[in-house]
Image 1 (cartoon, one colour):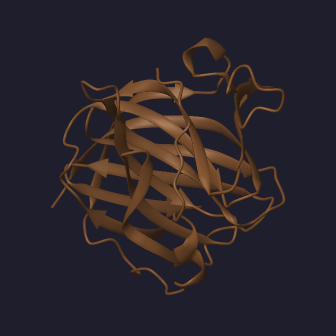
Image 2 (image 1 turned 90 degrees about the horizontal axis):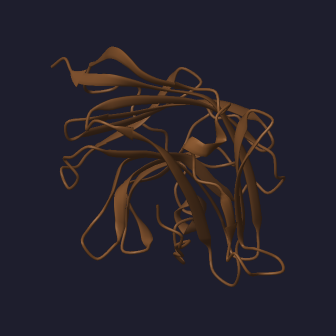
Image 3 (image 1 turned 90 degrees about the vertical axis):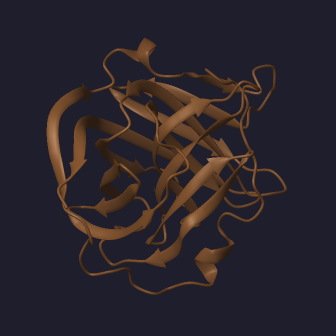
Length: 229
């Protein structure tokens, strides 16, 4: 499990620039298969926990299981940044559903699900991030090279509850197809073939420079997935 928190300076800039709606309907039908994992976060040892940097008086990131939920807290410095934790191995093609609650007040943030997380020989992590923000935006990104590179740029959707609110996310990673839903409504999709592999499932939260974000995750499920068309 990696112990470094990655930085990126531009991942929220497009929130201010893009406000278009996504597609009304997904372009592909995805079959939901066997239930692979149902996680209520009652067993803390299965998910990454800790404070980072570990010797700091006021850590930048805290990952913890509290009262049956997985909480991510992150404080950004002079640049926008994010933190993430992982705790579940999964095959390549999955559907991940998770309940989220933004606990912090600042809406200019991001949080969501990571799939196909894996390390290379140099110890660098990569995978896909399927994200929403506290101000009602969504996007899909490649997490690699210590940053988020967006495959589907930020768009806005009324399906996302803003601010300190509850949202249920459904993230699809099937073949080269990635799709994101919030509260039962389709948000957007992308095609990408960089990471055709099994990996870990993770959870992520980030915020703009000088800000703080705290998000709680609960009732996570992972199901096998396949494209029906």
